[in-house]
Image 1: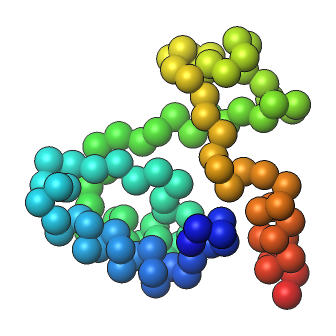
Image 2: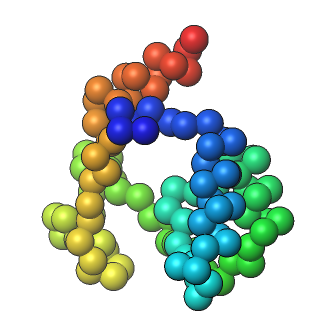
Image 3: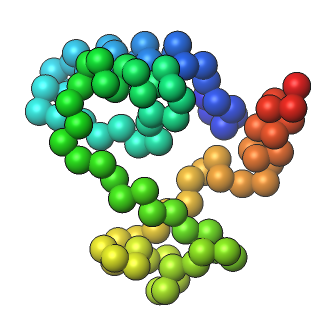
Length: 99
């Protein structure tokens, strides 16, 4: 996981099923970048009720920049770049995809 490679649906679903049952999640939880596949979505529908969905807004420094550098256009919150959002990781994922 630390390499930035994607893990299998089974691993993700297993981790989330366990987490949902934990005391820490009894008052709710946020799933970031999930669901990302059809099996993930099925888990979400079977085991949870969704209170709110994130905006889904996405920025790109060149093709869809924010109006104020580093800030969300609507909320004004700081924008962050994921650690795995880089050329090396993208290249690796594309290579895996084409195998």
